[in-house]
Length: 303
Image (cartoon, rainbow, N blue to C red; front, side, top):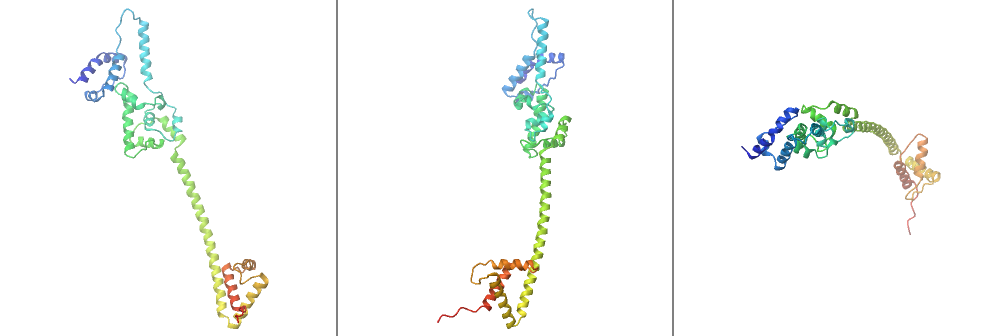
């Protein structure tokens, strides 16, 4: 017989009788599991067995003391089971750790302990909840390693994963999460609003571009008409037209053909627009310069 199995068999004998008497849950490890335990895990198991063994009766032990001892042991067993959680509180959290997710899916309060892996590892052979926790925690870690869950997954993702694994979800937990909602739904609502705003701005911009293209087309047609008229004029008519343009520009608007910049072109454009014959700045400047070159007398040549 293997050393650990022999030692374990000696320790478990009296405990089995007591477990049957008090109808306690006993999870007996297999020989392979015993040999696979570390020395620390095995020592914890044996100490628990020794603790649960009934003390031999003696003349100094009264019935009242015996009842008190049983009540204390019952209290310890109860304390080893976490209480039910405040599901609404946990539903308000957007992210859970894998430990918290495992405990919540088992219908217990993650606040009961902070060292869940250590607790479950030390009590998995004598505590049914610890054994269930370790199995569920292993599944969650496997899903995380496979990329199905994040190390701190969103609560709705945990519940969706549990459903896909056909795991039982506490109804109170599902109701609380559905009531509060999740960050994904908030993000979706925000994204939908941004998409709607984007479409609205896009439509407005397209309409504005269409108006500008129409105005640009009209201006090009007017420029083409003016250029056609200028080409159709005879030399004397063109000379007369150039003189009229430069004369009115210089006397009426103060246009200086020798200046680098002039406000006259802006004034001419505004007045033409007010009369319903809009011309752009570059077109006006082009014809003012042409008329100055053709109609104004040149500077006298130096002797």
